[in-house]
Length: 319
Image 1 (cartoon, helix red, strand yellow):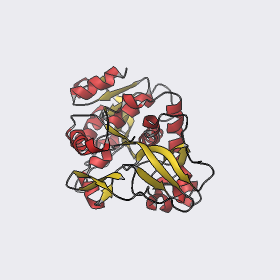
Image 2 (cartoon, helix red, strand yellow):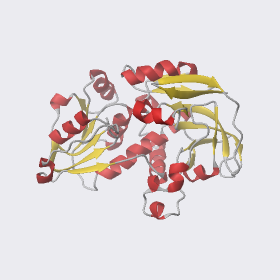
Image 3 (tube, one colour):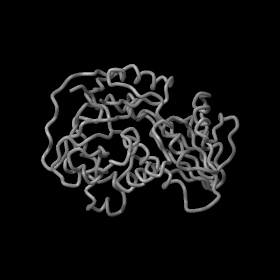
Image 4 (tube, rainbow, N blue to C red):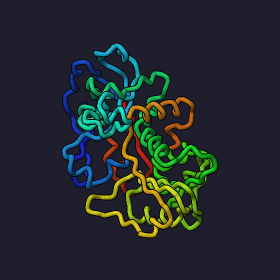
């Protein structure tokens, strides 16, 4: 079978490897669609995982099942990390800090013609027969957005919101936030893409002060912009990390302005279920956030194009 492996230095190889064997109590999946995550573009993060098979935004058909909940021939979305649901972290709703969540993964990865879902991962695997594979593959990134929004947005009507960065994740934030939210990006092409989706988008020069700001790029410049447009008492949600070599510089005046800084890392089963429900209700379609549907052989070039910012997001379709 063909798979996409990150080999370091921003390079992707398409290689042939044997088809994996269904794990005890788990699933063997024939991949239908797998998206390229923006996190997989971060060299500082990816180079420490070499060699690494890409792909965690994925959906496919069960080829072999050892769990009656997911019969052969059904479509599923499996999260690449899944919690135990029983430890103190899980019971407190902090699923991403569960030890099982940290150690679980799809094997060899979702950017392959076939992959396996270990038994432990089935605590966050969702039946998706009613969804298109290209939409089901977006459950994981959308779930990260659902967690981010829950982290930053209180149950208060009328609060104003801004999204900084209109890549795929920023677009998903705007789509889920709905009215009273605006997005900003320095790239005119991204502003225009957002506008074609009916979203309020501007360049940063037209920004106004707001109550909640979601910072999608992991950069000091994006954080500084958030600080500039934050109202007194506002919340800034950091959706992506800075590189380990960088230190986030926080101005002292945030103390006097009562500005809160929150972080939102990945997602858990509650978030994936919310994401699946939102997709079922038609609040997100793949075409709104995916610019290029490609074959796996096209992925190395698409990887570079996404990294350069010349395309929004590729998704590999497997036949």
